Image (cartoon, rainbow, N blue to C red; front, side, top):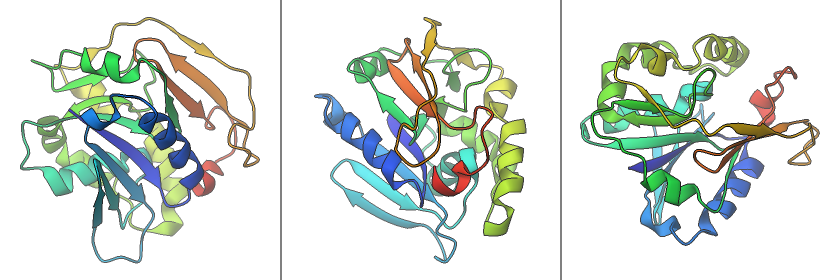
Length: 219
């Protein structure tokens, strides 16, 4: 299983923070990591660079939460036996993250969601399920910088769409989560709350909890 990080051209602070934490863990080199970075509208097609166990994919679209899933479909649709753990760059991993990730049983499931309810699309996807949902994924692909807010609204309405439709989707064991008080976590002027999911020792640093849509430009 590969780890896939959904990111954006203006999200360097969050991505650096996540990668520093991921690299500090001893199991880091056991995983292949794919980072999809949306918002490179001026390049004609995907630009791919590999450094050690990280593949950086610069995307000529910004499809909000779906950038990574669209990219995986368009570039890797022939890898039908592959699985990916998808997360956002505005996450942080705990000391037990890799250990817990390795213990997840993926057989007989084409997708596994982080939890019940709102998941922010975080979870495990098979390449097969991404291929099956190709029409949906292409319908939420945004190649127009001026339509970001429109596609942000669309991504909110369609959060968890694949998990909700996939009849084989499983839910990770629910061990609850905690939520912090709002803080300017990245010192960027945006207030965020931090949720910690015990089932994966994973933190999500959230800006879209009733705040403005500025995160699209600065997340």
